[in-house]
Image (tube, rainbow, N blue to C red):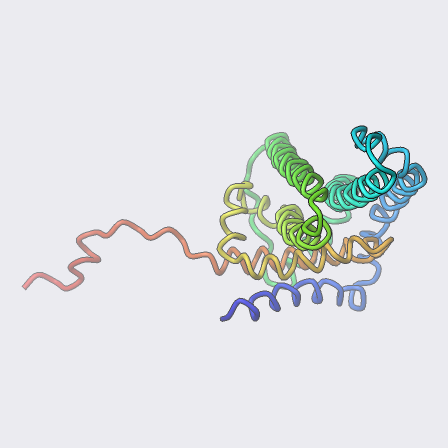
Length: 267
């Protein structure tokens, strides 16, 4: 299967999640409630930043106070654009993480309902609840650290003329899609005792499919309040992606034995 086709498969998983709005509207509405609450808070914060954007941009680039009027204006415009882009990037990921935490019971129901449509739910790994919670928090912290590092890098690159306005948004969508795929597949992988390292490995072996799911999700999250509709659908789609990645990733080959190297009976 070619890269374009695998990418399309990932897009299809998000589409399958969106179709649940038609088949299970009540369940999806429950998932939209926490997304709506968090979305209102994020929108208010973002509007507050936009209202004070000129002052914040001037504070962020104090060196722009020197030089000609054209230099000061151009530098502050670039700083403002980089700030908005960096905030949008950070908002998408913190939104997903915060919404998953706030609406955990609702999204777990969506995940379980999706698992049941594919067959039996994964067996309980049998570990104490506190250990599962601690592992989930640890994974969340590591993903948040990755998000911050990428956000700072993209913010800095946003000051590069031309590159900051062309390459950086594309790179942000790719990296953003990848991190969202990691975040949203957490339910399915954690239920199978798969830690973040194995999650990265499984999705990395199916990178085109993971990006096909993650990039459209990232772009739709940038549309005001679209995330309210997309978030529950993304949880369902991520479950399909996780099942695909787990089934498509080959197991580690077993060490050859005499039985495999000499399958025939002795003569």
